[in-house]
Length: 476
Length: 96
Ligand SMILES: Cc1cc2nc3c(=O)[nH]c(=O)nc-3n(C[C@H](O)[C@H](O)[C@H](O)COP(=O)(O)OP(=O)(O)OC[C@H]3O[C@@H](n4cnc5c(N)ncnc54)[C@H](O)[C@@H]3O)c2cc1C
Ligand code: SF4
Ligand code: SF4
Image 1 (cartoon, each protein chain N blue to C red):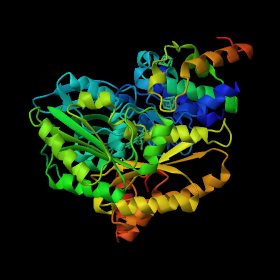
Image 2 (image 1 turned 30 degrees about the vertical axis):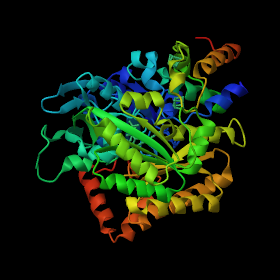
Image 3 (image 1 turned 30 degrees about the horizontal axis):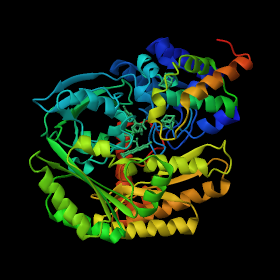
């Protein structure tokens, strides 16, 4: 080991304690990758237990020009949580206490390492929930969800992470490792420029989040769910328009395209089945209005040609009948197909969920164009998404050593991103920019005449992180 | 070990398996004490020949309870892969 590395590790152990600093090769490799297997090396892995630990580390890093890569559960899909060049991986999963729950004031105070699923388990004892539910809810951490600006299925009703962060404690990458509190424990707060919202989605490039006060909501009294299969996407889209016009209190509205329905049925266990494009809609109701709402929804589904319709009067019934199975299994289906069709059975497979949004009225066109790209590139994909906000997730998979496909992949992804941009939407809806979408960001801003924004963003980065040591080379 | 390598190379690194794992919970979130960590340590060992003290620690603390397997979208036989890998470690002379 070179002298500088050894010195850094010894310093960190002295400052933070030996039990919080690791330099084992396998461990660093394990913490050096994410869910699209972007990999990087690092000098050490640090697992802090308190805000003071983070502050000491950032101060040391500033004084010694050491790069710091903050990380939660490393389930990002854009290469945002992995080290890029030699530095320190700062994993916050051991700061995982829920500090306070206030039902009266509708908030929870939590450390960044708590998984969203665990947070909801605890909140459910109070009849409350945290409504941002990314597909990775079982693994995603609070800190990671804040910094990637995550969204999920219930976004149709509740919005995304940016709508739920009330107050933050963050540590800045400066000489003192300054600990700073921003926002307030109230829903309303006009504290000058909105730095809380600036941190949300900043992908660990501005500050390290060490505590968050998040808004919580009551678990709805009742939720009805309907799932049906439509011969064409156009029919499905017409049903969506009618549902929207009917002023239901929509909680979830998801679609899965016909080819994906087929592959989910062939490759995973599901309780329901059908042919065509699938629409699933959950609506908040009272117990008394459940049947009336379900019947109206069924009428709309059938009016637009749904061939097979499944209904559930309650959340429990929906779970028992497996109405969400096909939508939830489409990621699993991608993995299963990828594994089955690998050219070499010991090759690692990498599943890339893409993440564009278009105005919902442009969704049919977007899906058609994405399927055309599939034919053009000869790379198969599964396709599903949040139809009420036009967020589409094509899942693409590759295997290591498949040079041809690995070379084509960035071009295919660029073309998919372009569809989002050209149709008036965006190339990144929930997953962020990281390292894989930096060019997409430039293209999008250029397309809408907003290139100047990049300059402003660089200025903001310099203000927060004058030495450029915090998650460098990400986003910008 | 080809079969084990084929199986673990399916891992998508989604981490869905971790929240049910008693040992990662008991270790207060050390990744190598959980299924995602163990599966990828095995992959690292079989593919790149990397076996360290932490590999051994992770592999030998598994309870083989299989709680993780129900969560895994890739259908990886996590516990049996770990059991097979322990045999491999013994054969190769890695003793804990
Ligand atoms: C199967 C699957 C499905 C997914 N579905 C969705 C989805 O539906 N919606 C969605 O939005 N995302 C989704 N994702 C992406 C990802 O899981 C989410 O963005 C998630 O919120 C990331 O949480 P994490 O703890 O894994 O963060 P990480 O991946 O560890 O980090 C994400 C970013 O946050 C930064 N960061 C982490 N913690 C901190 C901190 N405390 N302080 C400062 N910076 C920090 C990292 O540097 C990085 O830039 C999915 C991923 C997978 C694998
Ligand atoms: S089998 Fe091992 S890795 Fe899986 S849940 Fe049990 S202890 Fe954890
Ligand atoms: S659930 Fe399966 S695929 Fe996901 S990280 Fe765990 S072992 Fe890997």
